[in-house]
Structures are given as structure tokens and as C-alpha cells.
Length: 265
Image 1 (cartoon, rainbow, N blue to C red):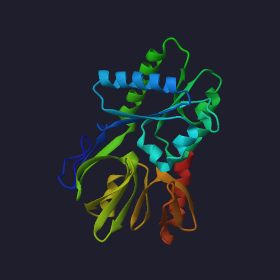
Image 2 (cartoon, rainbow, N blue to C red):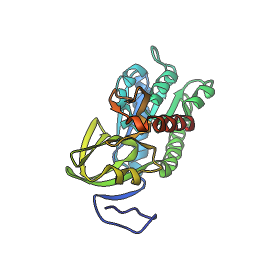
Image 3 (tube, rainbow, N blue to C red):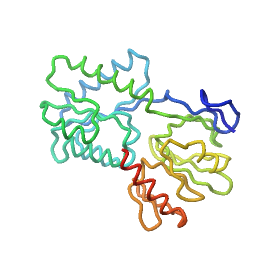
Image 4 (cartoon, helix red, strand yellow):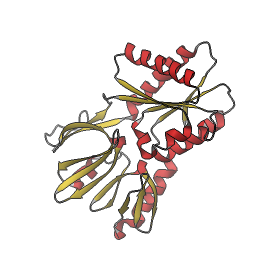
């Protein structure tokens, strides 16, 4: 029913490709309480992307509180530039909130001080950029080059022949897949939570997604562990508040798998 490049002989069908890389809109968030710096950084990033022919969309936020109020919709951004020294909710706390929803977003701290390296390590910040650095442009360019290099092996996407049309979807954006009335419903975080349908069986998708952080919790549900907030009382709670049932016979297995996953990340 599908074709996997570079791993096995090809087969045609609903799921066309599964491979590394993603060629879609590149979304970046800038979160800083200084408007002048937000505007300067935005111009630098636009210049970087334009020079490389990359489509991008940049949104700016004036506080950490404003950004985290997006909730699970934060995951639509690949990169966030965070000012560490913000009132009400500083960059470190904002980063911790981000990590509750996404392990894959690239966090870049911008700061006037270099004394937060330990805290940055805890939230897996990819870079620190000094605001007053005369080489700001070069620092931002180097940071973006490093992120692109990491993304080459980090992002996995698949192409599906959904009932709504053929689409490329990053596996990192799929919250869960539900089997319903001989169809599969894909719940995908894009600009907002989207739902796409596909003819097929969950067993096939489960086998296909093996090794990509997906967990079969029920005959009807395959869940991306990146979006699980907690597990209790035969239910999975996702970061956006959705509750999904765990089959009683699978509860211990699901719990052990999730604990092991959390230990690894």
C-alpha cells in the first residue's frame, strides 16, 4: 500500500513516501519584549531565508506569557527565539512550558548576559545569541546553519493520499490516529488542529510508524508519545486536553513504554 525510499522494494498505495526532510512553510517565532530587537531579528531572518530561497513565516510575540497562551499550537513553529530577560514569564520559564508540549522545537536564547548556560542545557537550547554583539548577523546565520544541519536527520515526513487530497505530513505533527468505521482519522497540528481521513487499517500504520515514537494504546488509537502529558486510570491525556482510552489488556505495556520514552527524552 505504500513506498518507502531506500529501505525496501517499493509498493504503491495510500501512503506514498516516508523519508527524511520537509519542504513546507518554515515557521519561526520571535518572543522578545523589545520591539526594536524583534524587528531587527525578523529582518535578519528574512534575509537569511530569502538568500536561500526558503519560504518562511515569522510571528512575533511581546512576552513569554503571550506565546505560551497558544497552548499546543506552539508546535507549529520549528524555531523560537526567546529573550531570557522578560517580565512576568521569562525566557527560561517559557522554554520549560514549550518543552511540555514539544521536544522537537529548536529553542534559541537571546540575551544581554551569558550566565544561563546550565538552565539552557536543561531545556535543550540550541544556541545563545548576545543582543549587543557586533556580529549579531553572523551569529544568527551560524545558528540557522546549525539548525538546518540538525533538521536534515531530525524531521521525518510521509506523503498520504487522504480523502481530502494528497498531503505531505511531518510525523512530528501527528497527535494521534483513530480507526473509525473502516477509515483512519489523522489528527494533525498545522496552523491549528486538522483532521484528515484515509482508507486503511491501523495495524498497517502501526507497523509503518514503528520506531517513530508512536504507541498503540487501543485497537482504535495510535498515539504520538511526544504529545502525551500523562497516563492514569486507563486513559491517556494529551497536551491539548484530549483524553483517549487505553485498552485494559494493554495498560501495563503502554505505561512501561511511556515511562521508558520519557526517560530517553
